[in-house]
Image (cartoon, rainbow, N blue to C red):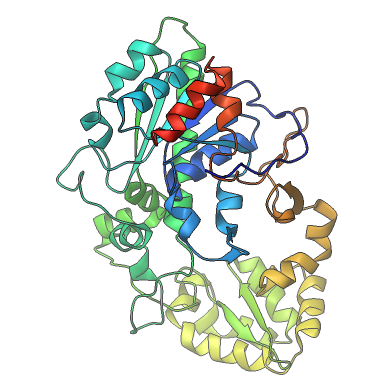
Amino acid sequence: MAASPTSAPTPAPTGPLTGLRVLDISTVVAGPFASALLGDLGAEVLKVEMPGIGDALRRLAPHKDGVPLWWKVTNRNKKGITLDLRKPDGKELLGRLAAEHDVLVENFRTGTLDEWGITRDWLQAINPRLTILRVTGFGQTGPYRNTPGFARVFEAMSGFTRMCGEEGGTPLHLGYPISDAVGGLFGAIGVLADLYRLKSDPSLRGQEIDCSVTEAMMRTLDFLAIEYDQLGTVRTQSGNRSQYAAPGNIYATSDGKWASIAASTQSIFERFCAALDLRDLLGDPRFVDNPARVKNWQAIDAIVREAISRLTLDDLRSRLHAHEVGFSPIYDAADIFADPHFIARQTIVSVADAELGDVRMQCVVPRFSETPVSVRRAGPALGQHNDETYGALGLTAQEIGRLRAAGTI
């Protein structure tokens, strides 16, 4: 195994979770996203990968000079080691690491760790206070508990994909596995909830947290279940049009740019009409209130679309801002990097990386007044912190070499 890249010393963790230790044995996105959120807030996160091949996320595009870029963000603020959990020596080392950590994050298929002897009872016999987050597609119970899957499966089965796409057309998947991020968010919230519970009583045992990514995605769709339950309504695609407010759509300007606008309340609609010189609409019975406008959305959308098509994006921005109407141009990554608000807030931050030099990525969200947070490091190279981590467990250089030769680390 080649020597791991080295870099300048990483700033010490800061933030409200400083002192928390997280052991991340999960793969790809949802589980690692959860642990990265904890790391963003100051936790010390140790990322575990298979020796030789590493996490599958390393093999997903895009790459630069063979270095996986997505990996650098999803596994930021983590140290990285390699360890084969299937080997007896690997399991023994995992136990020693678990003894020193507060949280373990995993997203293997349900029952896989149990088959390897890495059960909750085994882990908590070593560390009774260990909180165990299990992130899977469908949860630890139920007929689908052993079903493999990926983000598009979870998004499709949650009802989300059915609502995306043009009206009457094919359901549409997004260009990013949003359910993995949503599942990671719910997983991180679950960890924080259990840590709060444990704080109250030192005799309590850590919980096992069952986080289904499909259920997390469903939870974000507040209206979906209750609409069907009470009204029999099944939501389907509506393109870019808002299904609950009108006008609400994406509109083209005269200079070939795009703007997203939603007049979601009556007062906003009135200001919107003033901004576009459409005050006559206020007296039209078809548009008297939002339910009427939603019913007659095609008529009002045509009027608005035509009015906006005569304006440049800058003209539209000026008019809507003057009348305090919410509005956004449709940004791409280049627009985000150039926006003065994001520049002023340092929404995109520069992070030193041992493999790529400085890389830029999103800042930590949210921000804290008394315990500042930061991106301290980009995702580690494969096995970058093996010697440091295993040396801290008391292993000698000879023992580390033997484990490396055996493929355990």
